[in-house]
Structures are given as structure tokens and as C-alpha cells.
Length: 77
Image (cartoon, rainbow, N blue to C red; front, side, top):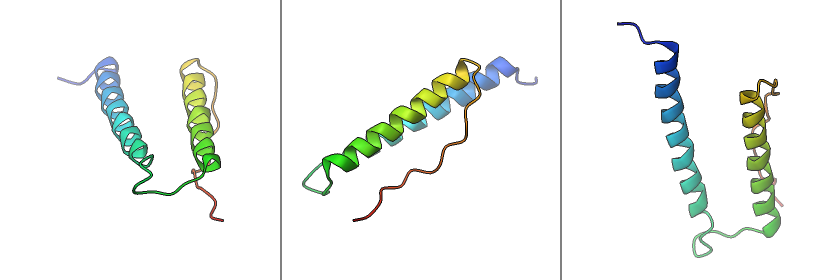
């Protein structure tokens, strides 16, 4: 039996959402100052980028066209 668009959406959306959650948990591990050194500005840049990507995602579901974003990169000192 062929998978419906609804079934495909549920399968793919659940898998991708769970993957994003897992990656966010891994990113959260970077907050451990015993293992990493970072500045408040670097953290603010990460949070701003994630906020922008979340806003773009919401816009896509609101039927607004979203531009493709550039890859995130922290600039080295």
C-alpha cells in the first residue's frame, strides 16, 4: 500500500524533529565550562542564529516564502 502524503509528513516530521532535539541537546553540552571556553558574545550569536532559523521555519509553515540561510559559523578571534 502506498504511503499517503499525511503519513509521509508524520513519519518525516517526527524523525526530523527528534533529530533536531537531539542535536540541540548535544549543543547544550557545549555549555560545560569544564570542557569548553567561550564568550558571552559567541553564545549570543548562537542564540540569535537559532532564533532566526526558528522564525524562518515558522514563516514557512505560515505559507510565507523563506530564503535559504547561510551556514552558521563562529568567527575565530
